[in-house]
Length: 83
Image (tube, rainbow, N blue to C red; front, side, top):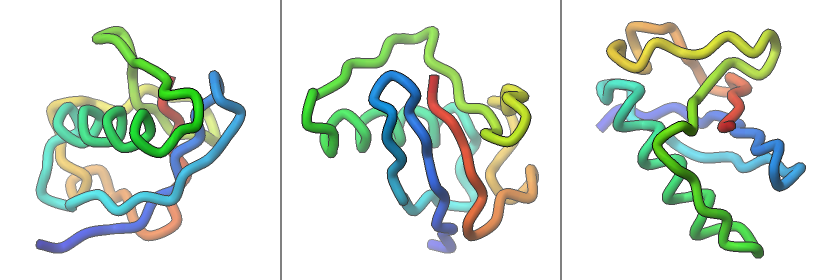
């Protein structure tokens, strides 16, 4: 499976995580994977709810949940934010 390494910033933790995401998955599935990974990796065991969204860190634009990582042009090093 083709994957890209992205940086995911989580404001509630004031912390970033470097995580691999599959290019073919739609963002709604990627968001679920990222929420689980951050919960597992964080010291505080942060819990996210269904209101949590994935957006671009540079401008805060919420990412279309129906498109895939590849369709959105997300590449190695893209900075995202989970909030």
